[in-house]
Image (cartoon, rainbow, N blue to C red; front, side, top):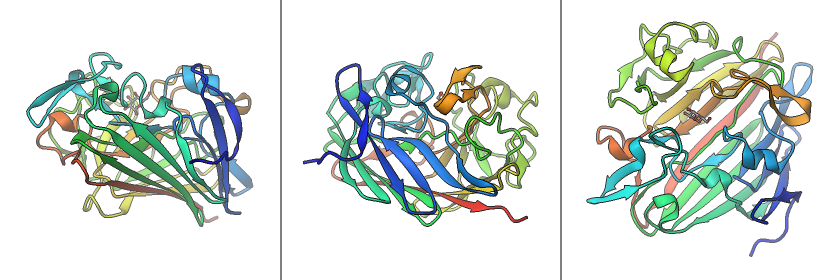
Length: 349
Ligand code: GLA
């Protein structure tokens, strides 16, 4: 069904061909590879010219071998499920424990490590699909996922859809690491971040939510006014110590299901600002804490911890085991529908 689009981007270890699609609307442009439906570059206007604002790699082998999920779509369940198990409709399901004692980002071969099919490739829009069989990585139901990347003015919009023939947990997100000063330009500690989030879900030592939804007020998690990422990251606040920095699920203010502002981040160095809107209930703010020093990136870049930040719009982590959280069960025959928009703008002055 899919015609050949884009340009070759290598062959996986299993022998599958990977392509790269280029989207460009004259204002912003990006490159998407079919491995993981990954955003490999995202170039936006800066004060002194175009800036590539996402971390990435030059080769497919690095995407296959390196951890960190750079730019990828993650699923079937983004983030963690405690103990790699959950009960749904009275039946227990067992998943891979690929992050200490827990399941992370869909398991050993999550959607980030599968080759997606190109359904449509236009100048400013690409649609990629993935067929996820019943029982894949332990999840129930044959799930068909569809991700649409669209350039809309100065925004990259990502629309996630999925249908399953059995009830299943479903939580799809994009794991881009942003650096608005330009990928490879060093740490993001001077970026000012603002999260439109009055509460967060505190987590234990292995990043599993404790089950409460706590106000950010009076803690270093309070980022409701523009704050340098580095201002409080090193404070001896238990959550930041356990997370090795920010790696927490924030509750996006307003009504889940409605597209509403979730975050705004700015770099004074390039004048690039980014606004995130989503209809998801939550968002993981992660400061690349586990990117080791000296990791080789695109075009000779060298990355390290804190050289990017992720804003992973999502259902709350471990929802399948947390009855108090908004449900992340995709019912058989219903449609999963998630939209996140990353809009770029130039700071005044
Ligand atoms: C998510 C998690 C982090 C880490 C990264 C990938 O953001 O919350 O703890 O696992 O993915 O390295």
